[in-house]
Image (cartoon, rainbow, N blue to C red; front, side, top):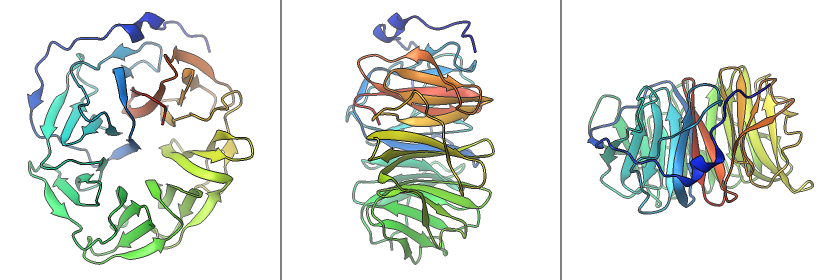
Length: 331
């Protein structure tokens, strides 16, 4: 597919100043959350771009967000992109035409921020989890009985259970966090997504799948390396995992509930592929060379937005808007 418009490469070199004041207002998260990615890497200048036209043009919306701690945890849902930096949450609404960011201060320094069906979760490096319920301004400590201290993600399942991905595997609670049981012990688990009752997770051993609400987990991609990223796409799932034989990260999609997976990374082999998302009919891939786009489910790819200084874009989608967060050192 021919690209009709691309931003010039010089865009990476010109910071975009934000002339609008940042709002000190509570942030809200829609119940239909779509994407989460924990990205503990140093933020470069010109950190955030977005495209509302399928990747033809990209707008630098970085504005005045500056990471004092140098790390971000990111996710996007239907209400926009959220960036966590220590105890500060930044939110960009895709409906805003300008580089406008709402700002909220959390009571503690946090290492992760994820969406939930009942509100937003934040957690610290030692596993303390807080939640701000939808429509409420205050953060409340939750899951106080959870004893494993290395939390990487929190997921509320469609059936009402709570899953925590940790350094020790996956823990499940069926009573809103009063009691917990370990349902997977295969090493760290950092991302969990769900569609049509099927759960897919990244783990130290590859990509995991559960079809019974998280009670049992089996490897569906296991090639000697770790699971990097999982996403829900139209009609299925996308996953990135490291293949030790090829010494490369491989991209796969599944359209049968995560039972079988097909590689879609012809020409994209790299150690630093960060993410794969879908917006409309397009798949987008964050790659060391820049952002690639496919209109045929990954059979062919074209570079639509070049990278700079080997920084890899981590990609997120809110509605039809694609966000690109530029990270030093990749994903």
